[in-house]
Image (cartoon, rainbow, N blue to C red):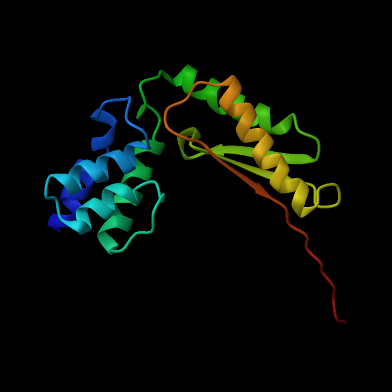
Length: 163
């Protein structure tokens, strides 16, 4: 219980660090905690809360889940509801503007965009390229906290009936 509590309390420690430091806030916070004698289990919970490294304990998984639940609620970020909705729509519009995209969904409070492509138009290699192109376009045209995961889903289903 103490590892989970401390991991949850310190998981965003890196956000308070000097912004000239190289790395993500999870990496920076975990390294800082490690240098100051915090246990390895808590340091892993800090480093793994955005799944940048593998979790080595159930407490690290709990910290990641709690962070996702907390960050996904409207109002968790320093923006009003109107700006929040505009940002989600902008993410979806960027994704939908690409050839072969069937649907897109901004989820996790805008930290992830899931894109469903038409499998008859887009092959696996093209799906990978679309993910990179959309991530680049988001980087170049939007301002957002943290990072945004771009997931392209290409699925083919074959159905047959035995009578």
